[in-house]
Amino acid sequence: MMTFEQMLTLPKMQASIEEIQSLIRTHDPSATFEILESPEPEGVYMRAIVDADERWPVVDSFIDRLAEIQVDDELPLYVVVVRTPERMKAAFQRIAAERRDAGQQSRHAD
Image (cartoon, rainbow, N blue to C red; front, side, top):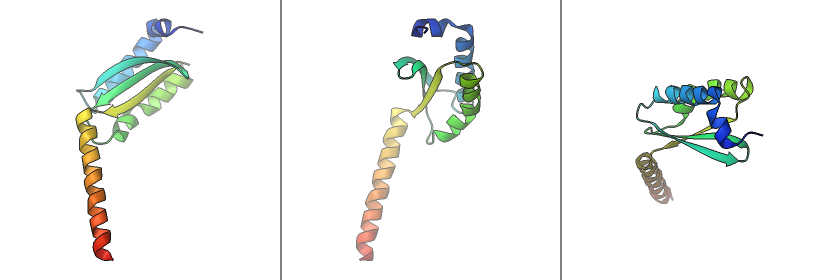
């Protein structure tokens, strides 16, 4: 089995990482990326940090191509999309407000 460092030096892996990053940047040009190693399953993990309310449109932009890379090219590349800390904080605040509002409405309905 190849080491993480060896996987990163493969021209196909480098090209695949750059391609997925490019697809993600079509949704968020300010996206940042971290390349990580993980033993389960072994492979290259890319964390994409995006400034977006919803992650799914970003995931939709690359998921088909990622599947091709994993199956056809047999490259162990995995991608996780997370929101920026500011977007996550705003989302948690919105959810908390919605729960408060729902709780107040149910008390008034009784």
